[in-house]
Length: 306
Image (tube, rainbow, N blue to C red; front, side, top):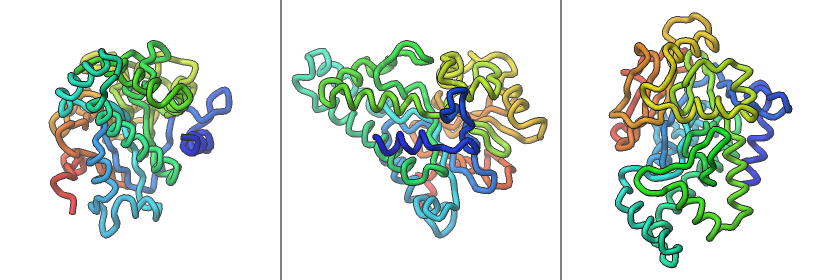
């Protein structure tokens, strides 16, 4: 935990422009001369993340080897914790364990093995490749189940947010819980590429550069880039964000996850691309030349990996 927090704190201003306190801000500037692997919501899918690192779709090198050679950059769109529909039955069983004070906890142990195991791999990658591997904050990056600061407690298939926070306090203790909480607070919100933007969720409104950079003092920008559901954004928010950050260039796109789709889905007059498919290993492989074609560049690596 300490290692990844040092990596986040040391990100240079040319990558993460500093906020008013001199800390790395909420914007990540991606390298313009590298292809970008855009990875949507992981939700404790250990197999997806390991498959990504082993995938050789870029040529003879695996993604892990390409990171070691500085030949690719990886951008994760957040939501590492909490298995989704595939584990709905387990969540129900784990909620009964929670209600009984975790006197027995086999189901919750399995959930936490997957969730914390996934986040441990994310932290290792960020620590090993700090300038090439980035992980944006999603709405599930809320291990304490906080209300406030742009966060809401999380409930979906069970009382997931409450259950995880209680489990962490009981079995890991306050110090580890606090360290993970601070790690989440240090994650950026918005990535800026040469021809695309990306955040966990659709932007609720136009958030200017200074506002996103200064996210630590602005819960509204945290909320508006991590929690926005379909149909909840202001009209033209995507277009205004693209113009504000990338100018008037044609062909620019905004990528996000957050809401489950099959393959990918286009919103905002085709300029907002949703890529979170919880049933498949879908990601976007965005070329360094900036000429993005969703039909060509969004792949299911579970089907095409070697």
